[in-house]
Each structure stands twice: as C-alpha cells, then as structure tokens.
Length: 113
Length: 116
Image (cartoon, rainbow over all chains, first blue to last red; front, side, top):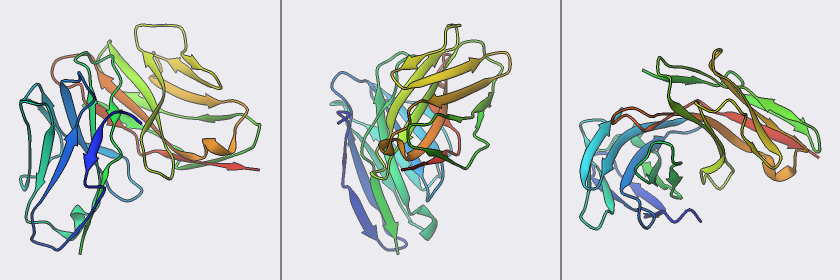
C-alpha cells in the first residue's frame, strides 16, 4: 500500500459525458501528479500540482482539467469524453524534492463506451 | 525535452537466471534521477530502484541492481535469481532536478516473462 488513494477504482461512462477522478496523496506529500496509461502503453504525464498550485503541464487535453484543494486532495475532471479517453489514470504524490520517488495510487480504470 | 527509450518490448528469463533490461535516455541536464518501476498484473506501480545521477556508484536493492553509464545515457536493470513474482511490466523513468519540470518521463516499458 503506497498510501495514495484513488476513487473510484472503475468507471464506465458514455461518450460526451463528464467524470471526476479523485486522489488523496500520502500524508505530508504536497505534490500530486496525474498520469494517463492507455492500453499497453507507458505512462503519459498530464499535470502536476504543488500545495494547491499548478506546477507543470504535460500532454493534457483542453477537455481535461484538475485542481488541488486546501486539504491537498486532487481531482481530475474529464469532459466531453471520447472513446480514446479510455485508460488507466494514475495519481502519484511525492515530497517536495525531485530526488524523492513518486508514490502511485492504484489507478482509476475509465471505460468510455 | 527528455525522452526515455526502452528498446525491448518483451523479455523472458528462466526462473533463477539473470536478466538485464535496457534503458537509454536523452537529456542535456547534469542533475537528474532515474528510476525503475514494476507494474504487475494488478497494475499497481511499484518502485524497484532509484539512481541519482551525481552518484557514480550503481544502486542495488537485493536482487535488483543497475548499470548506470552517465556518459552513454544508459540505465539498465539487472535482475538476479529471477523469481516468478518478478513477471511484470518494467518501466524506466527519468526525473529532472531542475525547475518545475520534475514530473516523471517514462519509457514504453518492457514486459518480462519468467519461465518456471
């Protein structure tokens, strides 16, 4: 158990819909990262938050957005969903310094039908 | 931009034997961190080993060790005495020390099969 929690574990929805994925980082971690892993692919970095502020953006679509709340949990919002958005979405957290590893949550598997 | 390349989509090893997974990366930075993560069928990402670029000594964690060649930008993972539980996808990852870009850059992964 990494200490990072993600809900829900599975999500099935239809094209055009909007969903919200939730992540709670490890206790004490201020940085939260979101990654997308499509079938049999590597992980693509989407976005990073540090202590409530956006820090870095990767290959995140305009239809996607995220935020980190004062209690440090984070939400990833995916809207106008397309079939190609079906993937495993990971949240990871870490301490401030880059040398520290990122601890990954169990992921949310999103299926868009 | 930093890129990570894993040139072996699949590898297999006999139980109790040794296998080496390859990883190369491209960067202009001098300070960075390299990681190997394991993703078993459960899909959980598990850190296997970490290497700081400023350290010449290769990192070792029990049966797992790395061969870090900074000049060649190579970071291979050696698994000794392979066990059935080592079967998984293995991802090499790069993390910058600088600025705000300290997200992980992952390779495409190597699927390791362990044969009994």
